[in-house]
Image 1 (tube, helix red, strand yellow):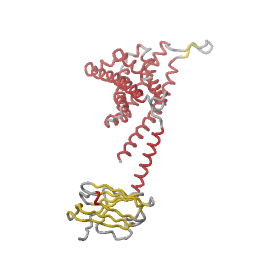
Image 2: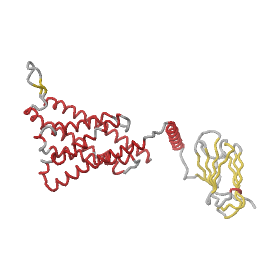
Image 3: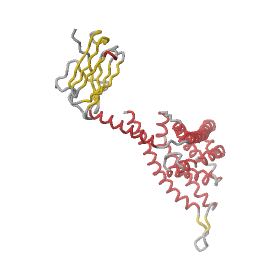
Image 4: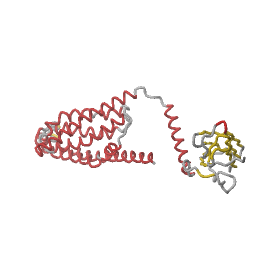
Length: 363
């Protein structure tokens, strides 16, 4: 009885040909292959179930260009997968030497790629292999787990602290209304002092290599906040009862209750998409508003420093009696908005890079 031809589906990469033969329950010992430079012969004897039931099936193909004699194959319950290597890593215009495609042959759309897509796949594989090679050469940090544990606990403590501030201020606002504006400092200051003193670690961590971020943006934010908290609010009793304290503290805490849990999840290699979006988006309106509230606090403190002469610098009588601290505050206002520009640019670059990378991975 003449052997029948099975349905054969094909796809290619620059270095390989993939054949998928629609033969179920083909026994490996019943398969035979013969390959020369251009010709490929395959037969299935005895136990192959194809389109016409259990029969003897075979087919042959004359390839467009030379191939290597080694053949890899794997038989499953539904099909036989065959891989043939090309002699040269080049893209073929078609599979067979004859222009007219055999009737039993069709494209394997499950594995089909255009030449440009195949080149992109090849580059991605090479980049992945290079990355693995580099990572294998880099000595693993024996203290990595300890570092991640420390960073996780730091972010957890900060998250709990700012969450307490935010919830406390929100509840007081709903209960007391505008009256809560005037005693915010006396209610919240101790926890805010703790959180902002601890935030100095955000300058130390990149300096010692615990995290791979720039030192300057963290320095600008941490030192700027501590200046407002300890100098403007902490040294002037008249400032502690002003509503601006409420707005400064509330805006700070609104940013941090999303930032710190994001970094907690980073420490355990976990991502929550909504939290990621909030962390990289909510600062866009809140950060400028926070700087504006800080500027209002500085402006309101200037006449108080002028009147009390607090922190003024004595100078020789020939020049004057003293250099008022308000002059330094006026310079600080200029520096504050310059820092806003620097940090806003840095944060926006981070956001763009983050979502561009996620989009590339998704595609």
